[in-house]
Length: 140
Image (cartoon, rainbow, N blue to C red):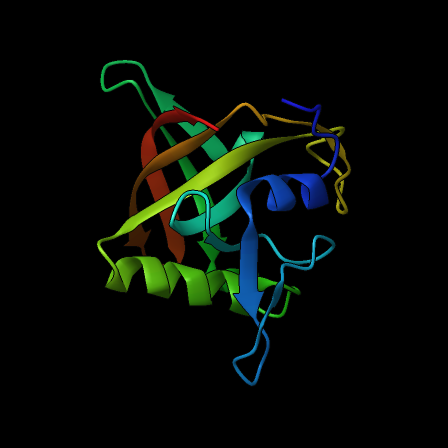
């Protein structure tokens, strides 16, 4: 597998698309969108910052907050919510991959690394305003 060094490469690897405001298919904007539909996985896929994930050692599952409607006017939230709704209406399955930040406390984060060898695939659920995917790793 080629080394993945940025989000755009990961979207390409997973063959991810989204829709524009009039319903035309287009590539995910790697600068300000954090989810879309993967033709490779055949389901919505999201990004998740490492510090927004938890690991359950008993169940051997990883969970991540993949969207929060309280993110409000942040660019990308509407796109994220579109794919959460899609997943909930189509079997409730979704995936995410983990991104490590250079500085978890920075207001505008920079990517230090991407876990590109695997995605976490599982069930998506809403918990108040947050949407959470819980699943197990799958190699890409």
